[in-house]
Image 1 (cartoon, helix red, strand yellow):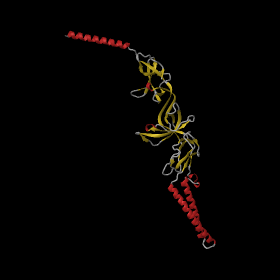
Image 2 (tube, helix red, strand yellow):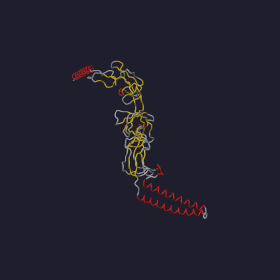
Image 3 (cartoon, helix red, strand yellow):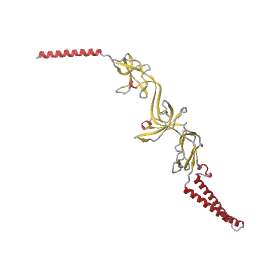
Length: 375
């Protein structure tokens, strides 16, 4: 029994020894881990946020009539360039029959009163000349006669206004000739000849006859999320891209940030505006959708590496890279980071331009290692 146990133990020891030799043999035949390297590059790193919006003119005016009527003539169409004072439209007033008849009766009554006051005045004047009545009685008769003449003039003007929409005495206060109030380009004409229009007053905003804007002074009107609004400030540069103008970018300056946000789709949005500059060579249509890249920070021509080459110490959380000092031998070096755009990160201290930095993905056996590849 004891002899059998001894033989079993000896066989087990031989098997373990043989297995160990086989493992060491296999381990010795394995290829060593091979890592590629990359060198730092010179990059311009920009950190930015994006806002969506539209391109609109800074100054846009709606031309409205100050009397109601029907459009008789239109002198402009969208795309026309006009100056302040140019004719936009001419209206034809369609009087209300009831008001017109009432105004006509007022004229008739004013004429009757005037004839009566004239006769009274002539009698009083004759008596005054004969020194029968006092000067006060004469002045009273003359005053009533003058008032009667003025009432007739007012009644005739009221009748003319109801019939034609204006009168000579009111001048430009009310006119059937509608003129442009600013110089610029006509963006839209939402009415046609024959359209009935309403005057602009305290109770009604009136009918828009045309929209005029200065298309040489454009702004980006957009919105930015509350999570980003704290990162921006007035005066920052904007890079505008317009969907309809592929491949072109326009410069702008952020000059307005709304002090109050508005909730939209369960998110608070803040309105921003930026003035476009140096865009005269390209005609930009009002209302085009656009995106504005707001440049928060910019570092030009700095030493940078890909963020994927960075490692962080488990205890100190400080960043470091491994630099090749000999063939496939690497040395750990702590680095000081600068600006990052999510792809590249600026390296302020720790490595030189010619250093070869370890890529943390080892090369497979069937791949040929590449050295000094630039990212």
